[in-house]
Length: 118
Image (cartoon, rainbow, N blue to C red; front, top):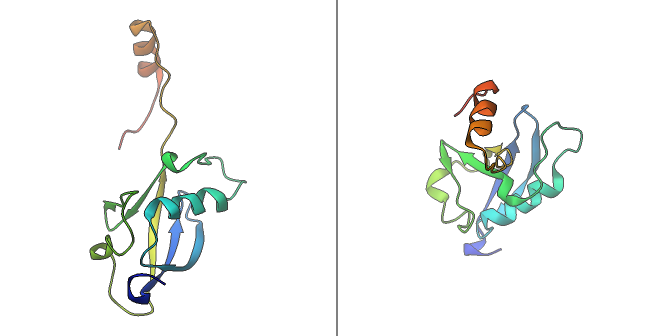
């Protein structure tokens, strides 16, 4: 393994509390590669399914992990307790709203939508 052989045990919690991709990962693992694995292992019986790496964000300790960084570069986010399983949360982003040429139509759609914005 890279980065001096360091590794960490991670699991990823999705919106309904299900944990996926529980495994030991090398510190040199790039966050975008983690996301690719999550897309591949995503339970197909869920109502929300990401189609690509760009459809999701990984959150740990209130911070977003950047796609281009390795786990080692994000290490300040993780606990140093040996043998601890680190739980990260996966947020799936809804697809972007289609652009419309009629601004009034778009406003009507937004007004009729009862959405919670985080």
